[in-house]
Amino acid sequence: MAENDKYIMSIKNLTKVFKSGIFKVEYTVAVKDVSFDIKPGTVLSLIGESGSGKTTIGKMILKLLKPSDGHIYYKDRDIAGIDDKKELKEYYKKVQGIFQDPFATFNPLYRIDRVFDMLYNSFAYDKSNQEKRINQVLNDVNLNPDRILGKFPHQLSGGQLQRLLIARALLMDVDLLIADELISMLDASTRIGVLNLLLELCKKNGMSVIFITHDLNLGYYISDESLIMYKGRLVERGNTKKIYENPVHPYTQMLFESVPEIGNRWDATKEFLPEKIIDDVEDFYKDNAGKGFVEIEKGHSVLFSNK
Image 1 (cartoon, rainbow, N blue to C red):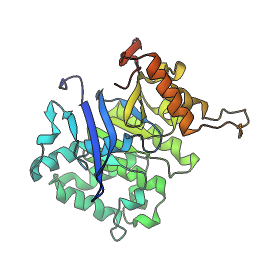
Image 2 (cartoon, helix red, strand yellow):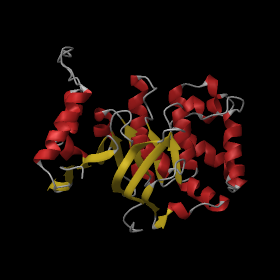
Image 3 (cartoon, rainbow, N blue to C red):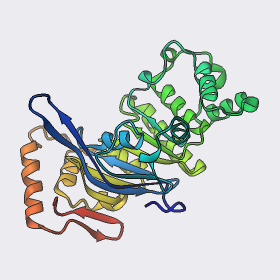
Image 4 (tube, rainbow, N blue to C red):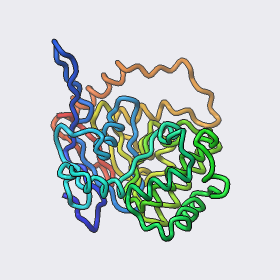
C-alpha cells in the first residue's frame, strides 16, 4: 500500500483482460501483473509501442476501465472503493487526464470562458476570486487571457488547447496528471514548449505526471523514471538515465536501435520484424528462466522471465 508521505500513487499487480466474441469467447490480456509507484513532483514515463498496454493503465487510473485484478492506491486509498458521485468528483479534482487530441476534449459550441465557468460550477469552487485565479493559471501556461477567453476551440491551435488543459489541471490543483501522447499531434516547434511547461509546473507546484508515449527521446527528455512496456508487461524500469545508458531487455534494445540518430542516414534496409522481436525476447527469457524482475544496478530493474 502506498505510504502517504512518500508516494502519490501505487500500482500493485495490475491486470486487465478484455473479453470479446459471442459464440466463441476470446480473451486478450492487455495488462499483466504491473506494479510501480510514483512520488510527488516527479515525471514517470510509460514507454512502448501501440498495443503495449500503456494507455490501458492510464484509463484504469482514471477509472475509465475497471481492472481485472490488482489494486491502484491513491494516498493509501484503493480507488476501487471510490464509487459514489461525491467521492468520484473529489478524486477527479486531484487526478486528471490529458489525451492526444485536444480538439475532442472541448465542446465546440462553448467559448473558453464558459468552459472555465462550468468547471467552477461543477466543482463548487469559491467564485469570489474566479477571474483572478483563471487569469493566473492562463498566464502560468503562457496564454494571454484577453486573447483566449472569448475564443471558441476551433479558433485556437492544438498547442494552445493543450496548454488550456494544463491550465485546467493547475486551476484544480491536481496531484497527478495522466498525459497520454500529449504532444503527438503538435508540430515540432510547439512540442518542446509544452514539455518544458510540464517540467516547470512539476517543480513549482509539486504535481506528478505519468507521461505515456511511444517516443524514447521524449521519455528521456522529460522523465525522472521510465517504465518500458512490451505486450502488456513491464520489461524494464527504473532511473531514466540508467536505462538509456544501459538498456538490457531485448525489446528495450530494439526500441533504441529503431531511433534514427542525428547525423546518420536512416538504414531503410534494416528491418524490425515482430517475429524477430518475439524470438529474441523468448530466447532471453529461456536463457534466464526463473529469475523474474532483477535489480541489475541500484534504480534499474529488468524482467528476465515472464513466468
